[in-house]
Structures are given as C-alpha cells and as structure tokens.
Image (tube, rainbow, N blue to C red; front, top):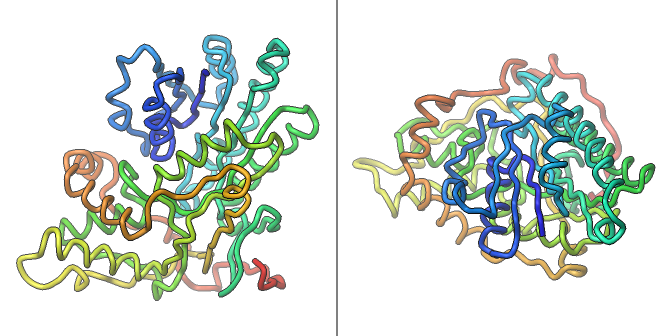
Length: 368
C-alpha cells in the first residue's frame, strides 16, 4: 500500500513514518515544507530505503501538490502538515491561516482530482485522513469530556485555523464524496518534539539550569498522549476507520501543567541530580497565555470500541522514557537551541490583562 504523509518530517508525522517503515510492506512518500519545526534527522535512517521518498514542497503550492500526487499515486493520505504552536499563532496568525486553511483547501482540491481519476478498484480503498486537535472544542469545566459530538468553540488563532480545516474536509466529503476521516487528538509528547512545547522545553531548561516557566498558577489541565501511541491510532483510523467518521484520540492521562513540570523535576533529580539543590527550585510562574483554555479531556471510547485501539504505555512510563531520550540526544536539541529556537517566551505580546482580550461567554454543560 502507498502512503503519502504531509508534514512527515515533523514531530507526529515522523512517528507515523517510523511506524509504517517498521511494517515493511508499505511505500511511503513524505511531503514537507521543512519549516523551523521539521527535522530530517527524525527520518535519517530511511533516506536510502527504496520504499521511502521525500518531497520538499509547500501544500499551498497547487502545482507541486498535483505533481507529487501524479508521481506517487498514493492509496492513503495522512494529512499532518500544519502550523501547530498556540503561542506562535498569537504572535503571527497569518502563517496559520495560510498553511492550515489555504493549504488544506489546496490539498483537498488536488486530492479530489487525483481520486476522480482512480480506477474503481482503487477508489474503494482510497482514504484521506485529516489530523486535527482537541483544541477546536475550546475549554472544558471541571467535569466531562470531549466527544465526537462536542460543538466547536476554538479560543486561539491556531485552534480556529484547525477548526476551519476540519470543516473544509467534512465539506469535501459531503459535497464531493471524497472518502475522508478526521481525528482530534490530545496533547502529544515524546522523542523529537520541537522544544517550544511544554515537556521538551521544561526538560531542556532544567538540564541547562534555566528557569522552568509555568503559565499562571499552572492549574491548566491537558490529556497527554505519547506520540508513538498516537501514530498507531492514526494508522488504525486511516486504514480501518469508517469513511466520513471522526475519531477522538486520547489516553485518559489528565494532568495539571504544574504537576507535569514537577514530575519532570523529580525524574531528573533521580537520573541527573544537580550539584546543589533540586530541579523544582527552578520553577518560575510567568504571566498566563492570552485566551488560555483551562481543561481538555478526551473520550476515546469510539476509537476503542470500533478499532480496538488502546495506548501501549502509561503516562508515567512514557514521561520517563521521554526524559531519558532528551538526556541521551543532547546533540539533536543543542543544534536547535543554538540555531533555531533558544527557548524564549512566545505568545505574550498581548499581555495577560483582560482589557486586551474580548471575551465571548456561553453556557457550558457538564458533559463537555
């Protein structure tokens, strides 16, 4: 089977590629623009494999996308190419609109043309799987979970752009009968994650003896999913999910941000003790992110019941493995810290004052 993975040099995309390459029987074409967060080192072991092809291209470029589809004629497309960091979307929303919305539209148009030209025997098994986020649903209260029926209520430019792309995919399915599936996942963590996100940023700052920034009081809650478990779930949906359906992906591992930071400190105290004191002494509370959602939690029963997917590791086990990976791969992140991103605060230009933020209230039921 031939797969095309957009954004395949990114954090989640490269995990999907590694999973597919381990299965031996597939051909994989990675399409990636190679923005700041992409890293070919995550794919270095595959560059000479005849089953693997890399195409550097921007999904906004319709000619390039059409050329790649004609050249490789994939059976399954897993669409991961996206701008994904909330803080960067606050500083520079335009790039998120361009890639996540215009890029998804451009890709859908090219894929639809490709699909229409396929013989009927290949149309039956063709799938376009769109990877999205739980952030499109907005913020939960202290109880309840996001389900596949939860109304969209995005809070940031990033989540709004992903919500728009989700709607485009559904529209192309309903209007043009393109066989699609969509997944909305919880927060990912694991190897090769670009160090602007919470877990790698805290690990690396701690190793370097720098402050460990925690937004606000650190009480915001996220459901955490190891990237390798996510990759397995994505391929389950892309290959066996029902066309036209949406599947939530989460591991029921809710944690407060401050608890995550404290847990990382405890792991590092054991694996690489400081010469004096403990890592938790580096924790520093900073002004909160504008529009910061309070809680996300995923109900993944549909995925479990229909496709039998379950996470393969606990959060505690996965977090230890992740800290160990960053300790063992300092060359990888040192290059990023020196040449791409030094760990500076992003997304704070509006400040934390509510005077700068229009607030739209709504009634929220406890089922969300």
